[in-house]
Amino acid sequence: MKKLLYSFIVLAMTLLYACNTYKEYEVEYSAAYPICGAYYVKDYDDKWVATSDYYYLDIFNASIEADKYVWINNMQTSATYNNSYRVKTQYDIARLSFNCSMNSNIPTGAVAPSPVLKYVTIEQSKVEVKEWPTQDSIIFKVTIYNADKVLERTFYSAGVRCNGFEDDYWDKEFGQ
Image 1: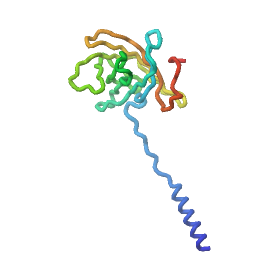
Image 2 (image 1 turned 120 degrees about the vertical axis):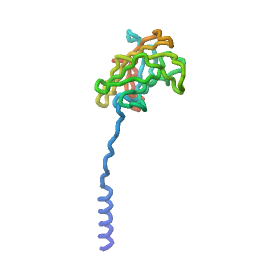
Image 3 (image 1 turned 30 degrees about the horizontal axis):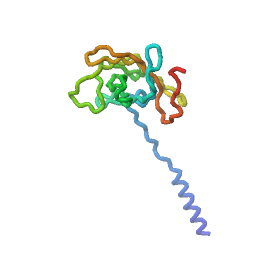
Image 4 (image 1 turned 90 degrees about the vertical axis):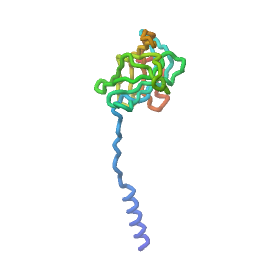
């Protein structure tokens, strides 16, 4: 009887201890949340005709003045692809937008002082945050200038935030 009572007490103590809850850790988001992240986007001309396949666009915090600037990077596209760029932009959390005017393209691995090969202007940007299961969307206008600040091309980029599930990414034109 003592063994049974002892076993019951040990079992009860084990269950009580196992049910002990731990403190929930608070997730610290970056200053640029919800703008930062990976997006699955496509480029379009001014008539909304697709000019590229889908590719991944990264928006991430700047290490200095993270409360003002983010990096926008689509350099993971082909090295010969003319619309690739990596640029530091100013963002506005209240409007969920970002922009820059004639900022230098900073290629990955560039060291100072590297010659500027192109300049980038980003405007008309908007990140739309949606409730799950609908994905957040992004849209913005990009204008690229050559090293002499002569207009080369203007295009729009539009797409959705990556969520890790390939099946959820759009396989349609923007807005459908």
